[in-house]
Length: 399
Image (tube, rainbow, N blue to C red):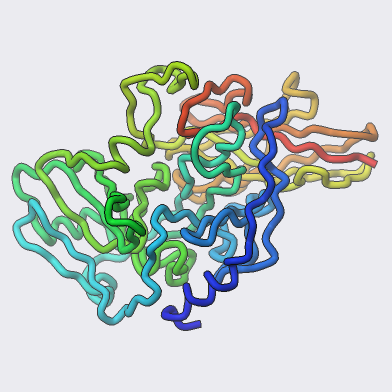
């Protein structure tokens, strides 16, 4: 399909979709996990859980997370602005670098690929609101289950190399990022993000490839920012402008959205909102069971291999533990090959159910600093529904 036809066809096909039923959180405070995959697929995607077609909001089903790399056509989609270009010509596309630099740059895709060192990083992309539907009472925002995340091999150019080519002025302190998507109404602020220059390292790249292919259109073609270890709100898609500033710029999507209470528990209550707040930045430790899924039928006295993925903000996963008795005892899962500090770490664990009926399987990740997933009921509420990382659980039927 030509990219100029992409949104014309995808929006027309998806316009009849309705949102899945919203259910209350279970007693174990697990995210909603029974939404159905749509019967309609967006271009470059297989059928996924669909929340909206404008802007596109697509969630990967649980079974996606039984492997370390998420295929492009199963990768979740999260846009903030509904006005997304329907055609991008790669021959004329340029990324602009301006602001507190010695020289403004207008870099074409060809120049990006030919004139700079090409690098790759395998990293998890996760929405800050992933698993939001586990919060009670309901927190504001898309009521994601576990599938607003994925892990890919990203290829591109170091942001540091682009800024070096432009030449930073002595008082440069912040980097702002803007993409091509726009709000539907002029009063609505554009989705602009910024990061302090001191946070820049060699792992931050401007990517044009995802798992060896051009970025899918819905995942930010032709360029997106990749900031490994950080939540995806900062991974700006369809990246068009990089603006260096000497001072922090007050922006809606920095000062209002994507913030949590600035206290030890990052928590508050609906009746007593906590001030001040701080931006969400690096991800906490988390694991998800990809197989089996809830309500899977398994046979007693046969081996069942539990598979899933674990990750954190880049310190690395030390252990994944599995429990079948409500967390009273834990067994250690086998970890697959390490694909890099920012990547999913796939795990597997064999169990042999001996009793018929319901069996709940729990997974808990521990990183190399010793940080571990808490029980879901231990996680305190915040109004944005951000950073939920409770111990995952699925319940199967043993027959």
